[in-house]
Length: 247
Ligand SMILES: [Zn+2]
Image (cartoon, rainbow, N blue to C red; front, side, top):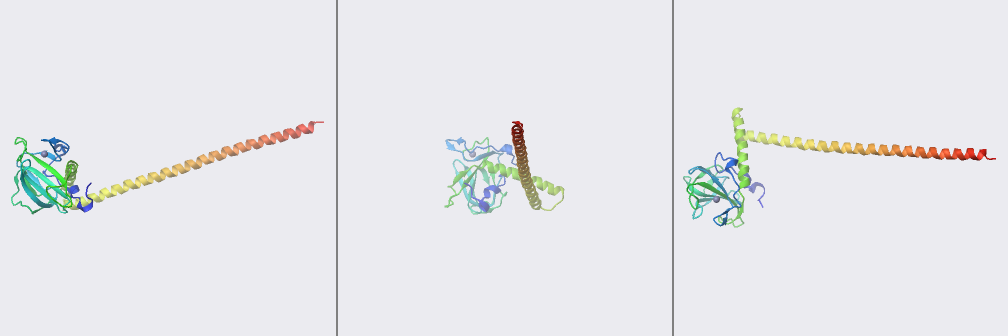
């Protein structure tokens, strides 16, 4: 369903609103709004809150629509996904179709244009996977909710690392982030190593257990043979003595 590898800008999203929290997000993808499938996430924010590009890419279309009001259609660099922002109060100064924007750059402001209730300004955010024709008004809707959640979580990790970098007076949060990824990988390898060791130990234990059972069976067989031998000898001796005592 999702394009793989470097093309998947969807996995590198930054939140469209600075300081966005998980409690601000609700999965409204499957809801029916005004008789239509919603297929987007609504994020309630005060009017005029700066809106940021979730990924780097190009402003493909600035469109004034009846339901969406002031809208932005942004393509990612690979032209795989189209990011849609609606009900905007306005666009950032100098924003125009064909302009390249960076991830996190302010591109507009939250509002209630279009069919949004003026008393509850919000960002209507949608993602579409573009077809081979790469038309801004066409595409397959993707639920933005899990990707927004990931973006918020990622942002919190990044913020923590920046704070950590500041505390340690280390230059560059990015380097710290890389170091942290290294630590994560090391932890992962340690975990895999531990699991492998546990499996090997378990296999050894089972092998030893099997040997022990074999040993017990052999001992019992030996004992049984001994008893049989003794019994046979007893019978032989009995008959020998019996026959000898006969006249
Ligand atoms: Zn909406």
